[in-house]
Image (cartoon, rainbow, N blue to C red; front, side, top):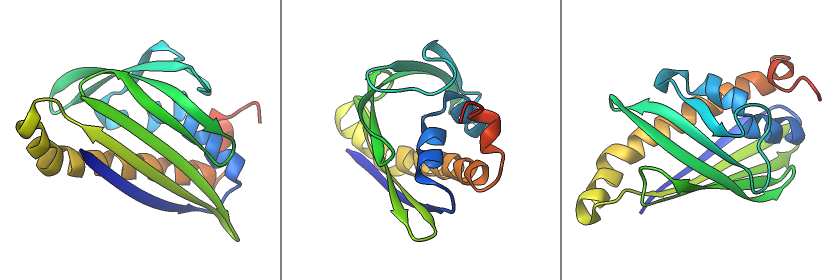
Amino acid sequence: MGYIFLKTHIQAKPSVVYDLSRSIDLHTISTAQSKEKAIAGITSGLIDLNQTVTWKARHFGIWFRLTTKITDVNPPEGFTDEMTQGPFKSMKHIHLFNEVHDGVEMIDQFYFEAPMGWVGKLTDWFILTPYLTRLLQTRNAVIKQYAESDKWKEVLPNR
């Protein structure tokens, strides 16, 4: 099973970072390189407990569909989403937001497993872990950029 752990310091309110991380609209902005688009379930705004979103995205030159469900929420400390359908054997993403003296420490705990037994394990290690790490780092940089400026108001207009 693959595992990615990332920590990102953001100078913003925990509630803003929490909502930006649940924003379908910001997710779409942050994954523009893979042409990711929400095509079913919650397709804009904020996703919440027991709601699903189906994403269509191009990775490695191939179009994929991935459906995730929010399985746990604890605002503004964190939430969890898990794959219900898609290319992985399993996938779980735990998002944590710890308030610190000058903002938020955003933590990603991303667990995933490719299908296909030992071939999948090799794929996890040599291909998926570096690729998904870069994808999450890019996403986190966009969340940080929006949260630390007034740009967050563009995707969270009702706050």
